[in-house]
Length: 145
Image (tube, rainbow, N blue to C red; front, side):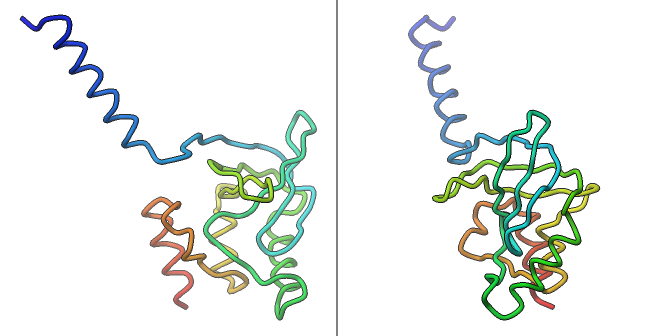
């Protein structure tokens, strides 16, 4: 039979292993609401049911700024896809500008990935380690065309 101290050591080791295996900053949350603004090809504003606005930076992608070539077209593409529509945002990070960074789902489709597939954004390799392995592969394959 294990002593109390041995049992405590085993439980502590198991707990520590679980904590260390969790991704850093893994405080996943979901934002559900309607898109009320599109700043550019990779940033939207979502209004939730409590009438709180959330600035969302689309995870895993980067798009041209409005003043750059195709910047306005990228914004138009994202607007056509999500503006005034109900969305679900899966997020687990806030960027240095205070925006939630997440995957925007509209009608069950990944708007971030669609922007890449349409050619109006590219897979943002600098942050691909923050994506799930399956998203990393999908976004990479979409940016290869």
